[in-house]
Length: 242
Image 1 (tube, rainbow, N blue to C red):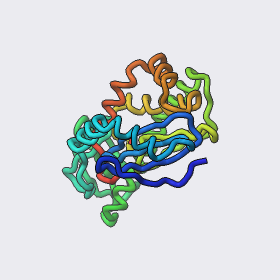
Image 2 (tube, rainbow, N blue to C red):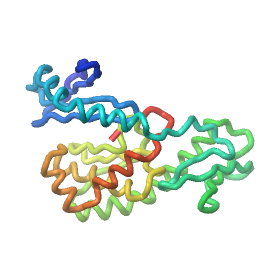
Image 3 (cartoon, helix red, strand yellow):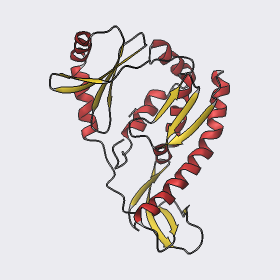
């Protein structure tokens, strides 16, 4: 059971502390703004958390500096000429007024065509695009989940796609359920595969310990480089880690 989250300030850095029934302390720095979070075993004191954070101050500041320089999309207005991403490639949006069914078509290597009715609002146009992203991501993820469940010898009872503000994906090992961030539709295809392997691996190893890393090295040797690619990709306008 997770206790209530509370906060500490260490060397001027606000740290979220969550205590869980885990064996080891885990510290993370998350985009887009360098939020610092510590997951700590129930018996670990705040004093011990402070010591752990102080020991990682240099690394925390480097991570935050990297996030500060990361490219971010501006707020989308859903009009022709905007840049939108799909599978790691940037496209120029072309809005085409259409009295039939709304949808999205990749016209060529540079143009993403958004077909919508003239009366749709900006939010409604965005929902059309998000629905298309969801359909494509589901189509891409389905065979990858089957492939890697077989390769790792694990099974999930369910999986889904949703817009998440703090994670690229998640795995509830107890419920055997995986969630994928809808934003993955914008990232290079290898990022989706890495994320799926990462989350399925948590059905074998709960924490990011040495065994977890060794298994990732064995099954997906390029995972570190792919993670770097994922975290270097432009972030969505909305505040939403991995």
